[in-house]
Each structure stands twice: as structure tokens, then as C-alpha cells.
Amino acid sequence: MSAAERAVAGEGVGLVIGTASQPATPLGFWLYVDPARTLQLDDVVHVAHELPEGDRVDLYGIVDELTAVHEGVSFDSDVRLVADGVLPADTAVTAHVAVTRVAPEIYTPPLPGRVAHRARGESRDRALSFDRMEQHVPLGLSRGGEPIVGNLAFLDGRRGAHVNISGVSGVATKTSYAVFLLHALFRSDALGALAPNARALIFNVKGEDLLFLDRPGPQLDDDERERYRSLGLPPEPFSSVALYAPARRGEHPIPDTGSRMEGVTGFFWTLRDFCARRQLRFLFTEADDERTQLGTVIDAVERQLALAARLSLPVEAPDVEIGGLRIRDFESLVEAISQQTDEAEGGTWARRAAPATVQAFLRRLEASVPHVGHLLRGGGEADPGRHRIDWSREQVTVVDLHRLHDRAQRFVVGALLSEVLEAREGLSAAGSAAPVFVVLDELNKYAPREGRSPIKERILDIAERGRSLGMILIGAQQTASEVEPRVVANCSFRVVGRLDAAEAQRGEYGFLTQAARARAHLLTPGTMIVQQPEIPVPLLLQFPRPAWATRPSEAAAPAGDPFARFDT
Image (cartoon, rainbow, N blue to C red; front, side):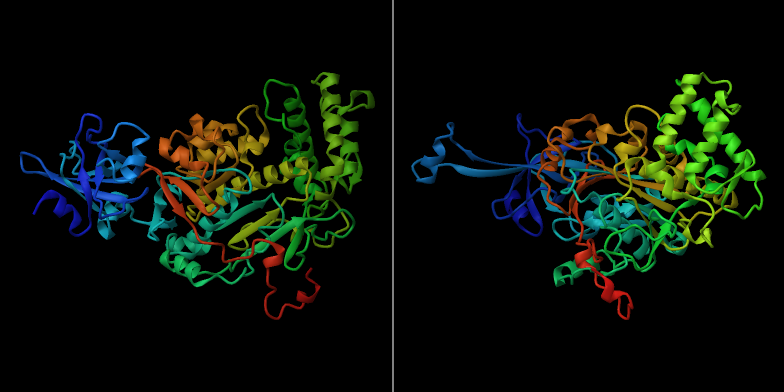
């Protein structure tokens, strides 16, 4: 049997090429695709060859480029003559294969004429290093419907951590994929015994899309359900969800959402918590900038507020006492801080700072009152504890921010991340290993490439030290080039949806091959390119449509819900 006949037999798809223009190398080679077979981008192939010493070497790879040419003609216009049968010519399809694994690791090129086979089953698992993963988490499906998995050890902090997702807003489905990844972590057997204690904290910054994770969405068709089954996941919404939205302005802390009110808790911080936890810095962007005196003033005022919180009686009250006055709202707190820092009024809290710096501090603080005042409250609420964000109560906690001013959003993100970090440090000391996943969109706003801020320092802390605390960041942004490089560099998993063509050429996407960069600005919603540590080339995958509602119009009220008739 000839080599060409052997290629057609079984799963053979072509022959290794060895010409001066297309030589075979240990890291990549070209195939002549048999005319009786179809090979497409992202297909996985396997070539075996024997060395003169008798050793067998298996090379596995992924098709990342395909070409088709007429052989035997010279001019572009000859295609018309070939099509009319005037000129004789053969059509040749060639495929470039990027090598993903060599076993054993003897790096020699495959010899020309060797038969390449389509990798299936165990052969595909070896090609993509799935067989090396002791614990894996479903990431999605190949275009052929085969599962693509990731190594959990690079996601839960044991060998690495964190996920970064980039893509054009509204098209790349960044948030949808982040939520799907949580669903895969919690509803598969990936986390094992840790799953019941694992938690996720999601900051919802766009619309009400994430306020219906506990509600089933539109009925999935059979194909979508089969995709979930292929991944070992149930096509169901999240079963353990806590929803929080900012308390509305006014005496009663009603959640300020939109169409959904049932099951949503209005959140705020008490003035005592604000002072005791030293959260004043999250109202400023310059608080951690050592190049300015403003950070010194903020630090001094925070120390005095923390002292006031400790000395104010009774200890369970939400108020604080400053200068003999009981402070019951944020506006009064700002006035008290102004009196205690302004030397003209006898203030001593910032005596070492220049008057101009103190005035700059007070102007910024006063400007935050209309945006943050309703989130910081004193007396008036019978049980303020029930309005505190308890991210450990349910498996998934969604904190809605989309109706807040940018300054208020920054405060909530910074204050809450600081609380979670503090709690994880205590749990880490006690030996707890259950991870908490933090999903944060618009990462370029909270951890920008340039400048310093308290929020950026917290995110950096999570990126660099979070894996040891079991705190995993799943960050998303339109452009990774605008995010602090140290945050992105610490992410074990890099994911891209559709990218702007110019953005795809930036250095932050160096993990993409040239073919992947070209494809990135053609991706459709629901299709992503994923890079993970154990696989040298990025993989294209698709993930199924959400089994949960993603907008108010899709949400179905649960059976027996007494509030269903009030939904709009």
C-alpha cells in the first residue's frame, strides 16, 4: 500500500511535507491534506515516526493555518483557464501544524511522507495535555463538540491562579463567559469536597443582567442541552444566590434596582464600620500616592476616625461620637472632619499638612457627599446588620453597582475587596482552603496601567498574593493594554473574545499566534480563545447559552412567588 493510500485509510488526513519552502521542524510542520479528507482550523493531529536508533517519537499539534493552491500554473488569471479545462492543474490543500506536545521529548522533525492522523479520544487528550491534569474544570467545547478542559491546579491557587478576559464591549460576551466559568466550577465535580464552602463575589456594573442568575431563562433547545451534557454540567440556573443593591436615598433602605425587587437586599455601611475599617481612603484616588501630601492627611484622619469608633458608646450603635457630638449621617461626619482638620477652626487632626493640602482634601471629601452619602448611615435603622453585604452566606453573591455614580462604585468595590482580603487572611491562618472567586468587569478603571489608588493596590494584592489566600480574581476589560501589567501577568488563564484589530496587535496579546490574532476580530458571541499554562498554543472554544435569565424580559418568576404579579 502506498503512503497516499495509507493516509486515506483509517483516520489518516495527510502527509508531512518536506520542501525547501515548507520544511518540517520539531515545533511545526506542513501537511499535504488528502483530497478525500477535510481538515480545518483547530483540528488536532498526530504524527509518529521512528528514529534510526529505533526509538518512536509521537508529535501532536493543532492546525493553525490552511492554504489551497493550483499547482502547475504561474499567473493568477490562469485560474479561469484551469476552471474551463484549458490548462491542466492539480489543487493542493496544505495545513500548518503547531506542535503542542512531543513524547518522549526528543525534538526531531517528522520525516517527509509520514502519515498524519486526526487525534481522537486518548490521542487528543495527550495532544492537549488533558491527560496530565489530575483535576480539571470544563472550559467549553471545540467546534467539533468535544470538551475542552483546564487544569484546576492553575485556577484554585495551588500552582497558579486568576483569569483575565478581554474583548469588545457587547460582542465579546466577557461577563457571560465569566459567569459560565463559575457555573462550571460549582456544578461540576472540579472542586470536589471544597465546592460547598467555595464562594463567588460578582460586581454587576452593567444593567440588571446579573440579577437573575437564580431564574431560568428561555427554554434551551435540544442542541444546547446536549452541549451542557457533553461538559458534564446541568442546564440549570444557580441555586444558591444572594442579591444586593444600593439602598435608596431616604430613611428606609429599599434596594435601588430596576425591575427586580423580590429577593434583593439594600446594602449600606454604618458610620461606625466606615470609621473602624478605615474606609475613608476609598473615596479618593490619590490616597496611596506617596508623591503627594494628600495621602498623609487621609491616613491621619483615618486614624482619628478609627479611634472615635472604638471610644464611642454604646459599641453596638451604628453612630460615632466626634468632638462631643453624636454623628448620625455622612454629611454630619464630613462637617465634623472639616472642623477637626481646619486649623482656622481649631482642628488638630492634620496640623502637619499644608493648609492648601487640607483644603484640597476637604473639597474632595465634600464632593463625595451627594454620591456616597446614602451608602453610609448612622441611627434610624432598627437592624443595620441585615443590610451589610454578607458574601459568605450563599455560594454566589451579586453586588449591583450599575445605578451608582462612578465615585460610589469605586468606594463599594474598594471597601468590599478590602473586607474580603481581611477575612481571607484570617481564614488562611486557620487553614481554610475553600476558594472565593471575585468577578470584576471594567478592570481598566479599577486597576489602570498608570497611577496609583487604594483600589488598585487591593487588586494588585489579590493578583500577587491572592493565590496563597484562596482568593481568585476573574477580571474582564475591553483592552488589556490599559490594565496594570502586573495584574494581567499574574493570570494563569488568558481569554479573549472579539478584539479590535489594532488592540490585537498589542504586546499584551503576545500569547496569540498570528493566525489567532487575525481571527480575534472575527469571533462571534459565544466563541473565545483561551490560553492556559500547560498548552503552548491558544485554543478556540465555544460555550453554551446561559441556562439562567440574563435580562428582565427573560426571567420567569419562581412557582408560588407571591410577588410575581408585581413584576414589570
